[in-house]
Length: 205
Image 1 (cartoon, rainbow, N blue to C red):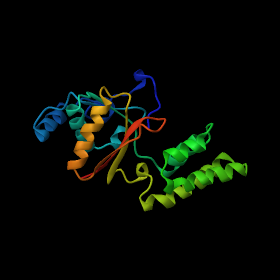
Image 2: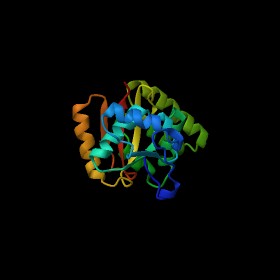
Image 3: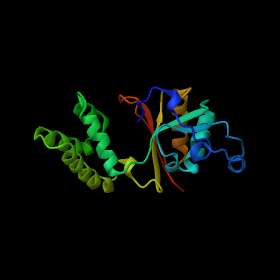
């Protein structure tokens, strides 16, 4: 999810992670898609862009070109269970955070929020609460919840910043059209949350 306001801190990754230009990769991209998509930049904000496959990035480039969005910023990618526990703890620990977390996360994973609420009421330490939340997250992952924690080699799960898009409404429209014709692609509009983003899941070939 996106919660940054300064564009100058964005690290660009064009075609390859690390922002390294690779002419051979660009030529391969043009050959594979039948047209040149190299003008569409897939960039990251404080993430390891290598966790987003070239297959997924090419899909984003296609959607970006068709929706008039030359820059697509990824703000959140694969997480480990400890990462997920830290994110949820951070959210819950804010003013009105528990209410916000219950609005953000599906009912089926509210047990993690319940653990925070109960242990915090018992004045348990931060580490104790995070560890307990992590264990519940690990229990839920095999049930298909917490897509950011799923194996990124099987499914890429990430968030695209809404406000960094040139034409966010058109991006969502084109992505939904792509979803309707391509099995294994899913987009969820999370603008209803405080941290506005499009959540995307792409099953890898």
